Amino acid sequence: MKPRKYWGSRCVPYRCGTRRGCCPRGRPTAGIAGSLATQSSVAPSRESVDGGAFTILVVDDEAAVLRLYDQQMRRWSLKPVVVAARNGMEALVKLGSLRPDLLVTDLRMPDLDGFKMLQHLRTMPELKDLTTVIVPGLSAEDVAAGGGVPEGVPVLPKPIPFDRLLDIATVVADRKRRNSSDVDVSV
Image 1: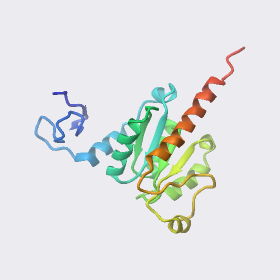
Image 2: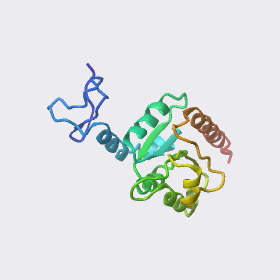
Image 3: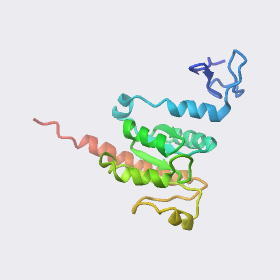
């Protein structure tokens, strides 16, 4: 049996292979939602992100959806670092510290929703080149009524089309590789 991994005093459910979601001390954990909340607050270090890892920030308020994104994206050949945020405010903080390569977001969330988060992004010049994809659980009319989305930002329907997301992520990763190889190292 694999040893359990701990963050603080909590067992991370499903990492040990037992699929029980409890720690050896007999204390139940908060389940998937608690696990994701703990994982999303532990971000990769800036070194790992700047070191060339392809990073995706996923913003959604539903724990099960965040887990689905994480499971599916980790299977991709790109092997991205997937970071989760539960609302727009948490996402803005992580955007400022991580500078991910791709942002995948929902629009309807508590605290700061996706519409307001996108408005804040427009005011941040350091993130002007960030590729954003919106996967709302809303109709086109509801998106327009909420304020719309910036021009050129793809809006994908739910259920989540992971094949289209992979196509977008591949283009972004290729562009990142080209840009890093185009750096002039001559003096």
